[in-house]
Amino acid sequence: MPDAAIAERAITPFDVSEEALYVENRWHDMFAQLRREMPVSYRPDSPFGPYWSVVTHDLVSAVELDHESYSSSWERGNITITDPPPESNLQNFIALDPPLHTAQRKVIAPAFSPSQMRTREEQVRDHCGELLDGLPIGETFDWVERVSTPQTIGMLCILFDMPFSDMADLRRWSDYAGGVSSENMNDEFRAEWMKQMMAMLARFDELLEARRNAPPSDDLLSRMVHSEAMGNLNPLERLSNIALLIVGGNDTTRNSMSGLVEALDRFPDQLDLLHEDRSLIPNAAQEIIRWQSPVTHMRRTTTRYTELGGQAIPEGEKVVMWYISANRDEALFENPDAFDVTRKNARRHIGFGHGVHRCVGARLAEIQIGTLIEEIVERGWRIVPQGASTRLHSPFLHGFTHMPVRIEQR
Image (cartoon, rainbow, N blue to C red; front, side, top):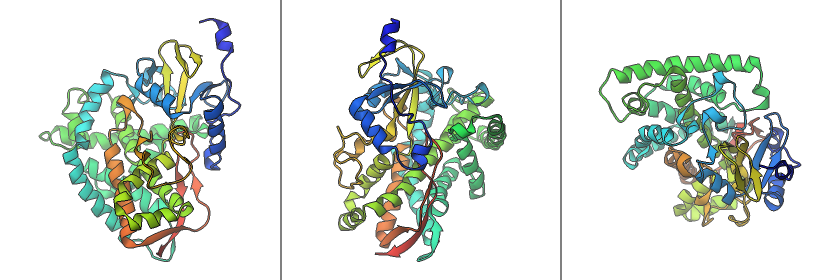
């Protein structure tokens, strides 16, 4: 490719990988400008190195669907904006391209089949009800600590058939496994990351060995250990896939559950609409995933020269799909910054990805979020923030670390 063509790259004035944008919740205007002026742009320097940004819904979808040109493989850099060192370059099925990705995904997918989800829906409802029954009415408490986290981590325990006493460990391992941040790019963090991941692997190896010695069942871990595609993974591959299941199985959902509180506070009329028409609740679950965008980005690496949005991208370059921007794309979503439970195309959000890498557990996340909304409506609650929330210091996961609230009756 001629050097002159490379020199014509659309250079963005913004480093949208900067964590402060998300901690301070001031990312909206930058992405809106990029959508208008340069939907595909290049940032030559950042804490994570140079990268391309793709910010509109149509172009993010195009990248997702072209896995031959845009690779997810761990061998080419993996799925986040970071360039992980070899010891933390997770080799799970989301960091593979077809056909290996397809074979391993087929092992996991039946655990989220419609018949399995009918069972999970009952478990979600029971678990959510118990959590909400234990909340103090009229007193300030932390929504992240008392609701979002135990609801989603508790469901992981149910999925893995683990005791609830393991919840604190699962949360800690999840936070380390999904801890993408410029602050974590140092030897001290990597050493602690390895310590935590080894502890996680040891615990799950106990569970996997127990499943291996038992007859095959519908249990998620049993499916893994008794399958040809995933039954003989090496230790790093086992660790990688467990980390994916833990992060994917809780972070997206818990951050949407926290985002729901913010959305209903900013748009209180939407709770009134849900009381007037409870058939809107499933759509409200889709809308909060769009509005919150709990996964800020996913990364691909070009396998060959390609063109996208009028830009020429050489082989081997980092391409970052900003889901958080695509879900606010004015070309698709009318008044995109509003939380609107009646939005007719809310389901077109890209919060779960698109194409072959669309989240395998998306339906379970929808059930958990929808159940929480239904319980809030049934109980006649308003969740009222009590002071400022604190947000994740990450350009990868978009959510909250603390959220003081008080429950009031409508």
